[in-house]
Image 1 (tube, rainbow, N blue to C red):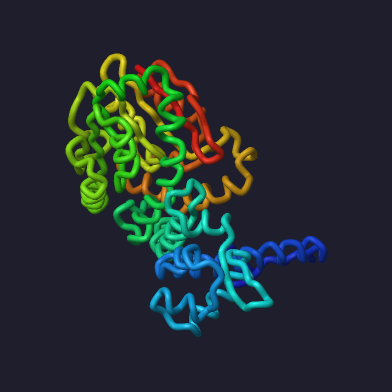
Image 2 (cartoon, one colour):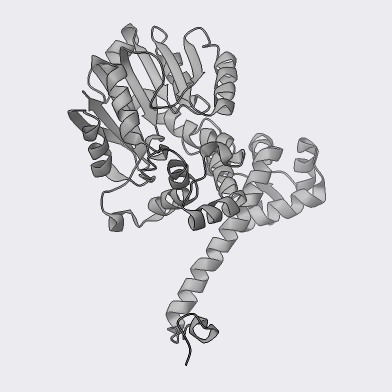
Length: 367
């Protein structure tokens, strides 16, 4: 007789026969996903080589013309363009053999200031593939993978992915949705941007509110170095400072506004971070908490946006949290209820959803 650990008991399960129609439908969806995965590498290639920007500048062009404009070789460009056309990422005029980008395609792939710019997202996805072995080891050990341990694509990609949304919404919609905050920033306020990464949000606010002073904090020294360089490039170095510091111990006090953009769920001890924020705010200060949009019920998040966020959370956000002390593992789809619970445990009394986008919750938290 086979024992519980014998080879016979470990044999492959008996698979029930599939429904042919459902199987065809699933395989069809998977083939589409495989095409998307393969195309992602080509999107990064076109972005890094400047092919999309050149197409937006040139107008309809042959592969040879695009190659000449970008210092690349025609045979490679021709194959890349063919794949892009098959993905509906560029247009082919079959009569002239020329390729072009529509206004919509240029907005998504070539215009980095557009709120719909998506090329940075593919760098984030690339980091997930490159770090799969690290995350697989974490699955087995239960340990985490720190933000600093990821492929460098993650750091640049995160900034390029989130910056267009911040450009579109932060100053125009999110800050005005906070009660009394915009007036304080215009008059002159003291602001901390915690988990600032490359400083895109910090620099954007500093440009909009020149009477205020801003300090960005992040534990990742490489990101702080890049943020300092970006502030100098933007000409705001006189009113922006960047420092290496953890969320639960960054220096300073009497802040009028503390911000965390899409980073609280990455922290091992979000309650500890929230408690420190409360301690460093003025009595009438405000914490602006921006998190990925999510409903409180898992079933309500099973949609294309949730698919992306849960995937990123599996490979990046949850491992980051589990690599730190406490390791709460909120995840990128924490939802408003769990976020409220974190703030209340930290001693905050007031919590409201100030506004939202399809991708973000913007929460106003007060002592």
